[in-house]
Length: 198
Image 1 (tube, helix red, strand yellow):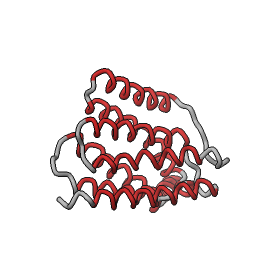
Image 2 (cartoon, one colour):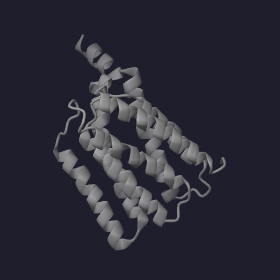
Image 3 (tube, one colour):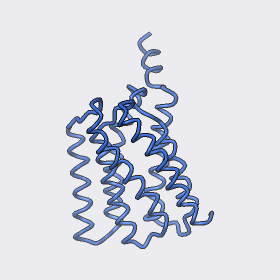
């Protein structure tokens, strides 16, 4: 375990990656899926408030920044004409789970329920961009996801008490960000598809 103040270093690192993606969005260099980025803001922000309610300390800020930066990217995506908004059954499921998580948390006041639904929502939203990163990696920028790996890693290293509300979101974020960063940097999707078509 490292000093809890390191969490703020992780938050700054994540914010740097987020600002980079935000600038790329405004310049039209990336094509963010608006549904993914909206849900990526809602789910972690719900989890953040649930974590605060559960008494989680500075580690909660690692989750907050993971929701706040996508919210900025979501708003910036309306400036980017290349961004797209696809409403599919999966998008409705993600949105429904997000609202359900919030409602259940409000009625039960059980923060872990909100965290579970936020994780499920975020994972489903992540699938949309994982698939896009596999098919069209050049439409994404790895920086925010690579920085997300660092942020999640720091969040895990500062945990004093290993319980669900402390470790669930950081572990998920570490895995999800690593997967997206790998797909974008390696451009493995087009290589595999080319290999299979030959």
